[in-house]
Amino acid sequence: SMSARERIKAIQKMPETMKKKREISCLLRLIFSLSLSLSSLALQSYRRFRNSLSEYFHLLQLWQKTLKAIGGKFGTGVLSYFIFLKWLLTFNIFSFLINFSFITIPQFVAAKPNNLSFTGLEIFTGAGYFQETVLYYGFYTNTTIRKTENSASYNMQLAYIFTVGIYFVICLLSLVFSMAKSFRRNFINPQTYSGQASKLLCTWDFNITNEKAVKLKQKNLSTQIKEALFEVNREVLNFSFKERFVHFVIHLAAWVASLGTAVAACAGVYFLSINNLQLFMKGHKNDLEGQAAMLVLPIVASLLNAFIPFFYSWLGLLEHFQNPRHQIYVTVTRNIILKISIIGILCYYWLNIVSASESQCWETLVGQDIYRLVLVDFIFCLLGCLFGEFVRRIIGTTVCVNLGMPEFDIARNVLDLIYAQTLTWIGIFFSPLLPGIQMITFSIVFYVKKVSLMMNCQPPRKVWRAAQMTTLFIFLLFFPSLVGVLSVIAVTVWRLKPSKECGPFRGLSSIYAAISVWIEILKNYPGSKWVVWIYQNLFQGALFFFILSTILLIVTYLYWKIIEGRKSMVKLLRKHIVNVSLTCNFGFFVDCLILL
Image (cartoon, rainbow, N blue to C red; front, side):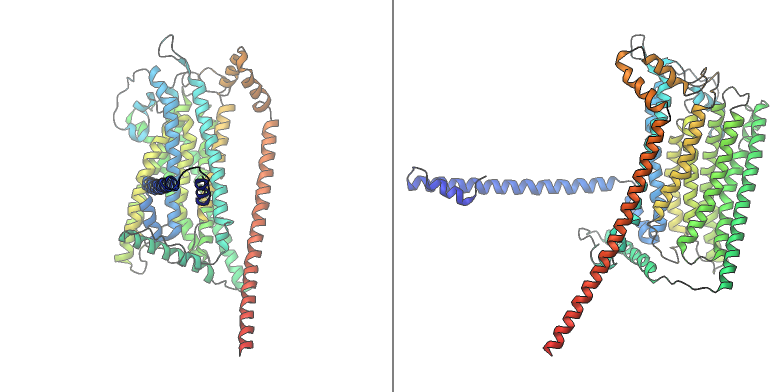
């Protein structure tokens, strides 16, 4: 720890001969140089290990190379869809793992043998053999599971409700955090207000040596610069009063047509679902004809979700938006109204009509409906890639060359993902393994969409920056998707009466009653009184939720004011930089005049 001068002075003060002092000095120099070489070698080894580890984890990121290729060729707008799809896949992987670990695996201990025969049609209908498996709510036991008499017990009721509840709390927190992070990065990041010279001069990664990686990086950077230049060079057209009035009438007519179509679609789904329940209650649920007839509802719902968005896209073309982002926002709004309305009608049918029917296990019936909706929606997604984009490319390149190759419809594809994920979230309670099925379908959809994009679609004619689209997608997934799902789960847990003959909550007045019974048992144990106190003083009354909502609103307001302050500060700093540069240029001009 001593410096070189301090070591020399210490050696000089030593009561030794000059020869001995020289030997000590040489030995200290040798030790010091050796320690320096060892420390530098250890530092280099650590840096190599850290770089190799970061490269390894970078390679482990799912579809990283594919996403770079898509972003370089098609821009950030199309890339945002695939990033969103990857993000939803992680949600389903996490949900499947916790449901399988805490609900399904313990059920295997108490599972009874399935005596039903497998015909193959169950893959499409979800009924028959699958009805007596861990796929559905009705198969799970309501007893306390013990492997042996002296082993620890496992309360399936508490495991079921707490696993689902904690998963939704994690989803809620994750979505809120992701929205805040995406909003900060895409709306209030100071780089948004900086010039584009830094993107051209300072973003190249000189560690890239592979030829393919260099070309991919060049293409990606070129696309980003084009998107930024489109935002800068965008022209604002000034229309006359007559032209503005015509545009207003066109927009109004388009909205009336889109809302009328959504109302008609919801009415058709509702009456078809009523007929579907009557068919099930007549006793035809086990024969081939009855099971095939149950596919009518999901097929009609998928047809409406597949073809009406094309009508909305055609309306968007008629409206002639100046900015492609505005057209996508309007199309997304119309699609979300359609899809959430259809899901809302189905939820009303499940919670008010199916739950009050004479079915022995209405929860399993709801789970089968959602299974069929998810599966048929996946099939229609694959058919859409084949007959929608592939046939459209053939027509645009051979029959009608003026049309050209189609562009990737970001709004329609993103809303398809939100629709599928909303169904999965609703179905988690009625079919705990449904996220595993959705995990497989999302993986297949990613590769099918990627191949269809590369083969059948062309890059957008108007290149525009769509980084803010990811924030919109996350917001739509939060509201109305997750908020609506939480409302459905809340009604199911607090209001509806479980089936008497199936499921882990059979015999209870409500699903929430399982927690009340558990709290009553905990009152007999002195060490668990703190749990009882938290339940009685926080969760049982409305004061806690009122305080929590107030704190959330206050934090949101403060965060918004901080954002506005940062925006103003960034703008003031930019003006100051411009003024300083003008002052410097003027001073240089004056100096030149003096010299002349």
